[in-house]
Figure 1 (cartoon, helix red, strand yellow):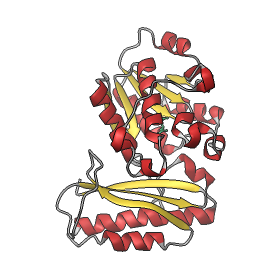
Figure 2 (cartoon, helix red, strand yellow):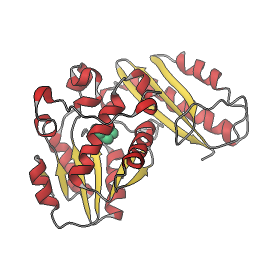
Figure 3 (cartoon, protein in one colour):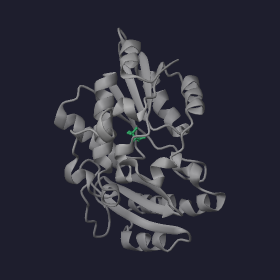
Figure 4 (cartoon, helix red, strand yellow):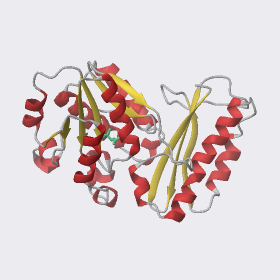
Length: 283
Ligand code: PAF
């Protein structure tokens, strides 16, 4: 496995390679990322993983504790990627990705109202930052396919929309959520939870499973009731729990029994850690 830190070295490492699969990451890798790499490995001759903690997608463009405290562990990450069968790791610095004044691009990808809902309502500008860095990574790695976890459902929907709107010649491949045996969705942020907080965080996946069971058995969903119970769970601050259209992420009004495929998306805070999760209903 080759590790490169500059755009020029990435271009050289990929010269003459065919069938490229890209796995964009911010590092702090776990089994969820390994499953993205496994999916890429199965479908491409060359697998590239990027590791870049992108300041543009954090509060105040990275001038915040969430960005500063984001786990950075390049050696351990490269070890995982090597074992998973990655060919090239691209781990650039902020200066390399955003050269120039204040390390900020002038031209951004704007994600409009799709990026302003749900996660975007609590994290203004987040999806513009994600789309901008992913567009750059697509230009730099020129992948045939790119792999994104379904855990970040809104990110996946926004990237799909960007690819369609801006005609990127790349196929977006969604990869299912990996859960612990307790049901918690794998996330780099789980590292920041104490054992007690991890137990408290399970309230979110429990709420999603309840809604899934009700949808499958044709019972009324009672979203308001599930939301109230989640909000009252010990140690949990509820941000949102919504039923949305899986492609557009527009809210669906479900009066009682669900009669079409939908996505439930949720976000909670446990202590200072923000956690997201989602589940498909009748998908
Ligand atoms: O999902 C992530 O880790 C990031 O949002 C991504 C796609 C690597 C862009 O920085």
